[in-house]
Image (cartoon, rainbow, N blue to C red; front, side, top):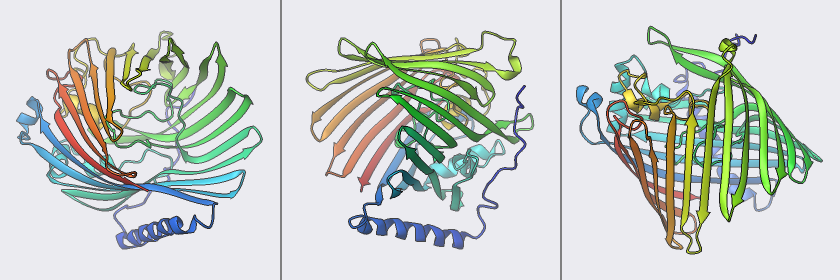
Length: 440
């Protein structure tokens, strides 16, 4: 039987607050180097760079007895300044190195209140949001205080080598096995939080991936990653264990559908699944099904089944609609967070650090719907919603995007949560975001 954890010392940043001046110098050198690439790449096609500079403001109206209890009833606000560099170096036609670095400065009274809130449970909020669960700790806190934090993170750092129909990728990368737009039970390596809307690149994994293309529409992938998982013990102290995720996937095309099947091991579970993508009468039809069996409860042949199906369609007038549903056999058929409790209650779902393909939702069943329409070529309207039919809680997400120039956009976005105490979307409130982004 596989061990519950792998007794290997973590490769991490010793004392991330030490030698801040040296870290600042290193970051400055990297930024200057990346900036010089934009000039160099015109002459040297082996180097490519993209990136963006982004300002995000968040206003939050808390709702729920939890916040009344701790006196956190006023409107809350915080701002973030993001910067990202993506760099590709191709020294040979068969070899590509890729680095993706993001810098984040978050500040405001909401940060201070979060620090106070998490300190009630003996936790450090700044450390929580900068936690890097990779085998290599590639997140560096530059400076922080009660009401601000500045950090940098490498979420991509990989080498890709190709030879004919074979491809090998080593390092921090995104292994994307998902098919659906919202919930991805097949995405056992890189599950993501839907509500983290402005992190479009999504997290990477410290992994090795091999892929062999066996035909025009078929391939075999074998991948493995090491990552850390945090858990709270009875003394409210955080434990950290190194876990293995590894699997093989076969992709093929049949009946004008793209299919994928896989089997392997994720963290503590044996897993297998399938996915598909095709269309019915012009409407996109996708689905993912995954089964998980805890290695410590191997006699329980039922395991956990997580399945998601989606349908989307674009009308002639460019209106786009998307509907999806997710089923989790281990989910709650009552208030989704009744067994969570604690000082955060339902709000703990938006701070989840151990999200994976097995726990994409705490409910047994959720329904998603979305409609979007480009009012003009420069303005797009969208409205999305998630409904839990068991505890009757709901999320509504309206947004409008303005293309100000070819590379500058403005997004106004709402994340509105309603529900009773300890329901899936209760105890959170309403959030409004303003996002200004310059891409280069």
